[in-house]
Length: 68
Figure (cartoon, rainbow, N blue to C red):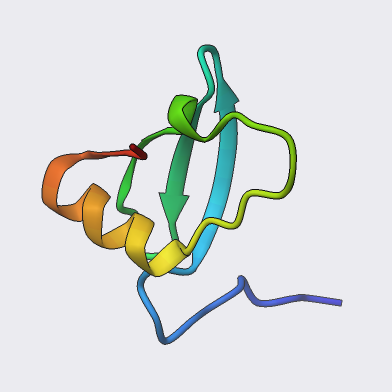
């Protein structure tokens, strides 16, 4: 059986996420855009919800997203 690759009509759909040292993530989106998300300011007990559309926009503008 052949399964076609995942496709999305929105560019901010996340393809891969790789954890990095110092609370950072390497993120690649479906359209090939990639960059670093710095999460060090969000480290506290509880859940963290990351909006991929906001992540995408900031990485597209600056190559990284630093959460403050």
